[in-house]
Length: 134
Image (cartoon, rainbow, N blue to C red; front, side):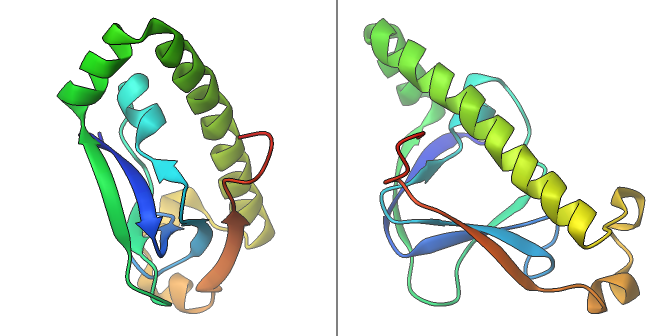
């Protein structure tokens, strides 16, 4: 589980299925954030998050206890964050499933290093904060 909400101030973060640098499928950029739905829904992240190789990455973070305190102080914000977190989780899972299907990733063989060598390492879907859905 994430213990903080991370907001990307500069740079980008790349998501991989389970291991760093293997099966990268998603990239989030400056002004985006992550860790929200894991905290709001008490979920464990099943993907690997790492600073992208193309530039330095700087994030702001709000620790879970402070985030929860803010959500209790501002109930309207909690409703908004929860609605967005649910929608973001659905979209992230859709993109992840699309990648797994397109590249025939067998979830039971995720630790098979030989199989990883044959799969793309830089299939990355871009996600921008300017998207009106988010």
